[in-house]
Amino acid sequence: MVKLKVFLGKKVLYRAKSPKKIISFVQNPLPLQVKDSIMGLYSLSIGKLQMRNQHSGLFFRNNLFITDHIDDIERLKSPCRIDAVTIFICMGGKVNCSVNLKHYPIGSNMILVNFPDDIIQIHSAENLEAYAVLISTDFLKELEIDFRQRSDFYLDVRRNAVCQLPHAEIAALNPYYTLLCNNIGKLKAESPSIIKGIVQAFSYTVISLMRFFQKQDNNEETSETARNKQLFNKFMALVKQSRGCQRGVKYYADKLCITPNYLSGSIKDYTGKSATEWVNEYVIMEAKILLKDSDISIQQIAYRLKFPSQSSFGKYFKLQVGIGPREFRNITL
Image (cartoon, rainbow, N blue to C red; front, side, top):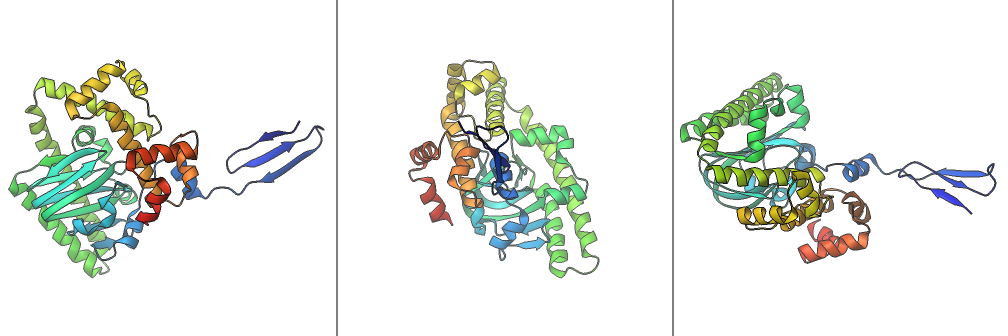
């Protein structure tokens, strides 16, 4: 009897009957990018955005991307996870977007903040007058700006990514964008230091404004709305934490210490969609990101999302999307 042990990207041993006879070889290891995207989250860097959107805005190294042509960024028109904090400021017009499947209609004098591990998508825009500032995770670390350390702000934004501001406060943010445009465009010897200072001041101003005005919005909620929102937010946090790998409602109900029927009913009453529909949407969103932004095979994507086989993943994807994963990948390249 021949025994076979297989380890992904490691040594494979074939042990024959005789204990002395062992044949070994090393499989071709998966590239680091593939292993990262199979085992963890797959994110687009600002550098990759630059390769795809060279004429949509201004880039400062791989650290910063600013643009006032948000509706021209094709990659944001389908689910996308970016390795950056995205700050979107709307001065006029309308844009319909979603963060982690939660839809946000954004209009004049509104601001949206999206964190690096969140999934954002722009569905439509109309007469849009807005700009966006994307700050890479590495640049934030270099500037010693950690949004998570400001726990009240971080948790409020995770629950509600959008905040309405007075017009005067929105107008007060605009000079930061102008200064960034001027300094990135000229890039003189002293520009990098100036850019860092502007980004720091802009980031702390956004944190301060959202902390203040989101608290006012939260105080206006009724207790029933707050309870429904709390259950939904906890549920979606678990869905996001599972990274599309848990598709049964019972798993989430057990985590929340409630029955599956109660969870499904409550989510349906609050959002109009069942818990299963939310889970399916998130799984498909993760799958689309991997199909669109990575080079890993469909079999590896099925493995990443913990489907028993490529075939079962293909059937699941086609049932939700209407076409198979291979066809989806081909038409979006």
